Every structure is written in structure tokens, then in C-alpha cells.
Length: 331
Picture (spheres, rainbow, N blue to C red):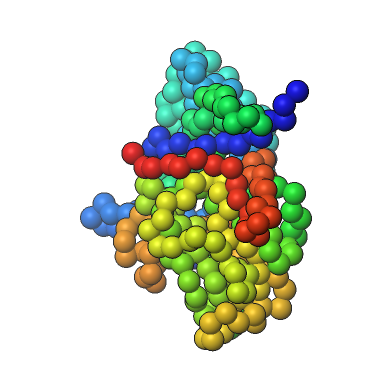
């Protein structure tokens, strides 16, 4: 029996304190006075809630009453103010029971303003992670079998078979250059560990940064998400990565290292080898580099994404890691 190499081709179908205009407790709207863009998100959805919402989404897909996981999470957040610390699986079951008559999620919302806010906010964070994709099985003779599927199509930033350690570090103090908060999530591992593109998109930034060392920034095709991968390996941080390149979810984009905290290029000045990965949400161009940036706490989401670990193989002649993938182009 031939061994099969299974890989997924993902197709596109596609700050720390509460501000005065917080939709939960502030007296103002969460958008600007002229009906503008979201300026703040405090993402506190738990791992368990993410898993249960995804399960409900996938199980209802294809039915007459399909319910999306973002809708479910937005509904729950509109009731708990975005605080999922007391979440129970029965919370989603109660909603699904209400919808058994064919009604929509929105018809059961009691706070429409909060629901709309969380629907847009969570949609911006999670919108590219679940959807249709094609699973391709390749036999030793090169023949392919393709199967259309629906489900989680985003990947863990660490390749399958590689260990990493972590802690709940979002918002911790950082002092290199100036005092600031840590707006990402650090995954401690071995130098050379393959780093995976969480979602498909365009390479928006690549090269040296005095804080992040060798780093890569990838913008999602819808423009809402900017994935930041930093402290990549000295001398060989990545292979064939350049600004403007399209990368696929699940593709190897670089290698874990300890570069950064130096104005001198290609310097190891990080004490512990790790990947810093961050997720910035952008509703308006001014938020990309401005004072009003939105970065997401990735602790729960990182654990959630371990459900999809990308396998890699080593090209012995070239000494590179690759993920079995096919080219993807945006709509």
C-alpha cells in the first residue's frame, strides 16, 4: 500500500486599558463620531469557547440553519461583555436549542449594539481561519486525490513535530529602547524550528528591525489582519521570502532564532531562542503605524491552533524545510 502524503491547500473564498469609548463600559460609541472604525478590542475568548464554537459551526455546515462560529462568539460576548472566564459549553447549547426552530442568531440578541461590535471585531480577528479548503492526497507515483472540506484552515505558527514552551505574556513589560508593553506571544523553542504561516496573505515586511531582529510581516488578503513573526534565525532567517510575495497558510516561512534588540543587522541579542508572533487588527490605514494600534492577546488562540499543525519535510540537498503546498492566488 502506497504511503500517502497529506497536505492541505487553503483556498481563499474570501491597548491594554479600557478607553473612554469602550462599547462595554464607556459612555460613547466604540466608533468615531462620524460612524468610523473600531479603535479598541480586548480579545478574551477562551480556548474552550473557541473549540466549542468551531465544533458548532462545522457540524451545522451545509444545513439549512448553518451558524458561523464568529456569530456564536459575538452573541456570547454581547451577553457577557466579552468576558469568557465563566463560559460553559451549555452556553452555546442553549443558543443552538433556541435556533432549532430555524431562527437566526441575531433574532436572539438582546443588546444589538454590543452584538454588532463583537461581530465586526471578532470577524476581523477570526474571519480567515475557518472556511472551505481542498485536502490533497499525493501518492508515491505523484497521483493526486482532492477532497473538498470545511473547517479550520489556519495553522499553528510552529510546525508539526517541534516542541515549544509558552506563558501568558501579553502586556508584560519590555524596556529595550523604551518602556512599553509586550504586544505579542512568545513561543520558546530550538533554533531552526520551522515557522509556519498561520494564514495566507501577502508579505508586507521582511528584513531587519532593531527590536524584532529578522522578521516577517504578512497581511491577510482582506487587509484586516497583520501577522508578525520576529527574532528569526541568524544568518538564515528564511528562504525565498520577499515583500509582495503571496504565501499560503501552512507554508514554511522562516526559522526560529534569537535575533534582535540591536541596531546592528544579523545580531543575536535575545537571551532565549523564541518566536515572537503577533496579530495586529487594522480597520483603518492610520492604525497600521499610528498611536491607535490594536494588537491581540494570542494565548488562547495559540493553543487553539495546535489543532492544525503543518507537517514539513527536509530537502537534504538544499538544507531547507518545505511544507507540501500548492500556489494560491487571491480572488
